[in-house]
Image (cartoon, rainbow, N blue to C red; front, side, top):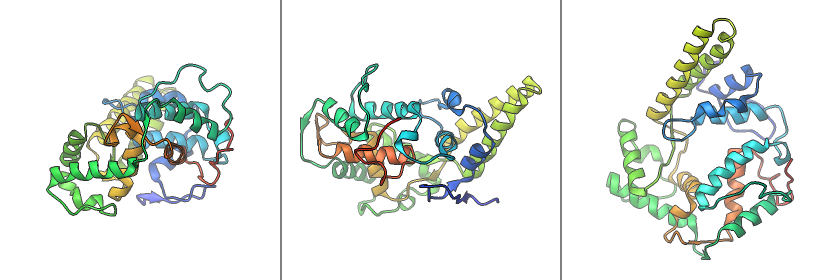
Length: 281
């Protein structure tokens, strides 16, 4: 099938899955996790299509529950949590924690800031709206405003970078076309097999695919996020303190909901199963 997206039937995974992810999950039969270090882009961000593919490929054949998630994938997500909440985890800090609720409470208690009842998502929306208005001169911006309307394709890269400069941090919301990443991932897979036949050809294809993916990721113009409201939620998760009006405060009542949404989206977990009693491996 040559469609840009293909819907696959997978328990607890009902959203359309890009063809590049299916290619990787079908053809890979080795430890994908060991390749993660190769997939970092030049600015420190992982190549989104490959990172997503790694997770889906590893979990496509198992039930999507917290206890089935690779601990290393949870650790990767906790690195993002550290950055968002400006905290630092130490070795063996989570020893004794066995449920998702205990993890949420531990992270909440670790944030040593003053409590404020103000809503971070609301403040993130105002910050984002002001940054977009200053960049595009568009004033009528709402949560259901389509990003494609305020970020026209021909100027999208430039506008996103200007908005990021206004905010003071990156918002990785653009990606290449799926057929581009799909083709490069297929070359990547072929190169791994080629290493055992002709290491020179295999290495050349490997370098070509990885460099190609980094370039495609850097100049991609496709939007995975449709509305400003969705972008606001993403911004709140990944840059919680920077999204708040006062970065020295936090709302302890919203941390668990943010973590639940984050674990669900990044690890493809069904939120109905991601309860406080959900157990780790």
